[in-house]
Image (cartoon, rainbow, N blue to C red; front, side, top):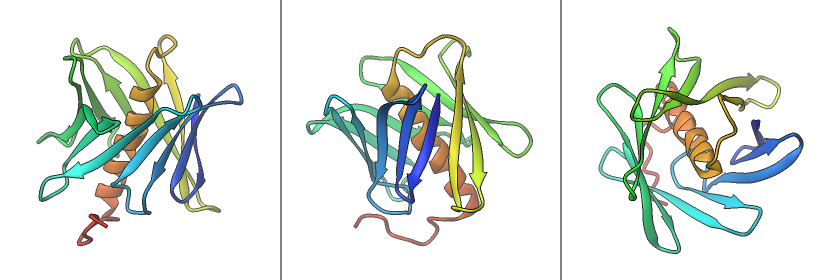
Length: 162
């Protein structure tokens, strides 16, 4: 599975050449975004809080999940039904990211690859078994992008409420 950056604001999730969904940012600062699936389902991701370290995921105006950065620099993805996952950077330079469940079992791994010609990231995505939730995978791409842009200072000093 791959998440390919098809332009500066859009990542397309693809498996065996078949598109599964898209993560589309409102602007190039990786804050507000929406997730679209092939069956026309749409989810909105909106940052909240003064430092924008939290985001709310909603569908049709109803909150279904939230993403919060913890003090370790990890992003906790909490669904309102009670499921909780953690996206963690791995390696000395956080060159890989994993999503783990509450039992600390690795479910999904994201390997970002920087394309110098296009000046964008693509992700190679691996998992132990076929992921049941494409939404969780796209939220993982969103969270990985957030961490990468935070570490590189892409959004520093910019108000992303527009």
